[in-house]
Image (cartoon, rainbow, N blue to C red):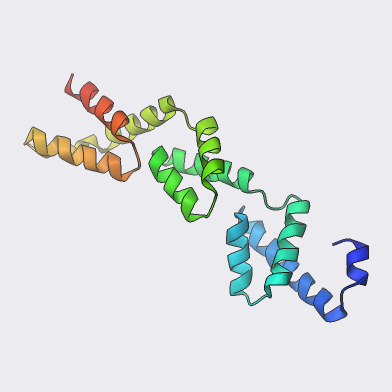
Length: 166
């Protein structure tokens, strides 16, 4: 906070703001958090909403929190774990990131080719367990359900299944 704002705030409010800021910094030292995550964690610690808003504004000003940066890191983590776009989109929605921002970041950072490659890697890794199924239709259905549950769309799955049949 700036010196001008501190002069207009009572000493007890200043102390509360400082405690909340310290808590926010402690939370953010472990990993990046989305703005809403930080707000929720500060609420759980019992800080007033005005104090939380001031702390979040200050954290944004100091570049301690940045939803776009955090989303990029989160997307790259989920890509490494071989999740599809649909799963990542839902995960970001749970983190309360807006739809337009999510779509923009996904379009820029997760291409169709990457999604197809991740699905292929995942299928190759899991194929041993699917080969136990003798009935080819059941095997195909299990593969489809598995890939769909990991967030891959129908086009990617269908394309992989076609390549698998060859």
